[in-house]
Structures are given as C-alpha cells and as structure tokens.
Length: 136
Image (cartoon, rainbow, N blue to C red; front, side, top):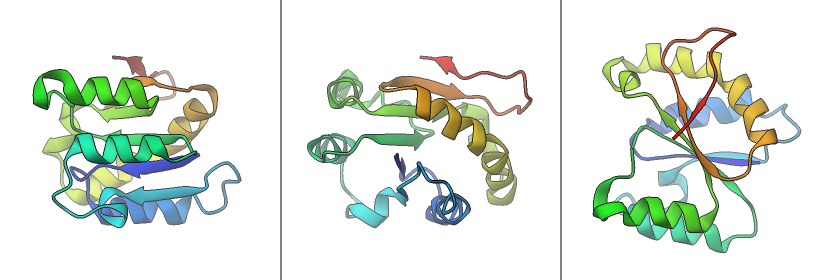
C-alpha cells in the first residue's frame, strides 16, 4: 500500500507516519504531496498522475474535493483511489494534537485499507475502539 497526504496536511506529519509505518510489511510508502509534485499542482493533475502509476494509492486529506464543480471527485472515482477524509474538526487543532490523534487512528486506517479498494471514507476526530469509518 502507498499513502499520500494531501497539501492540506503538514508534510512533517506524513513523514512521521512514514517512519512509524516502516515496520509494516504492507506499507510500501507514505508520502506528502510535496514529495512527489510541485507545490502549486492542481488536484486534478496529481489525482490523474497517480492513477497512471501501477500502484494503488490511498489518499489522506481534509479537503472535501468539492472544487471544480465535482471534477475532482469524478477524477478520484475514475482513478480508483481510496480516500480518507478527515472530519472538519481536525482543522481546528494544532499540529501536535492533530499528529497525536493521527497516530491513534493509523492502525485502524491500515487495517481498513487492507480490506478496501476505492471509495471515500471519513475519519472522525473522536477516537475510540467502537468508532468506524463512514463511507461518503
């Protein structure tokens, strides 16, 4: 599995999750968008570009992909990427709090990703063992 953290999340968070995932056999890469594309790359460009690669990518974002009148959502659907959208509440928290919460959620994301191909799922802010990802 390969994971890409969108530009609306800190690159340092993606790099930290990459380090924490290094021992996971199924995780081949965790990258930030800025690791692969220039900073001003539009969502439509990188979504399409990733789809041309042979590997399936799992996208982690706070973005709802509603710009361009649904063109981004359509591009994601066509590309077949699995997208994890963080609940809007994630945006209101500082870096360290957000990072700690992502570390709590990450094992569940990995488990879910092994069972899922395609689709958009919301990661809630509140973490508990009974919380599930909801399909969007």
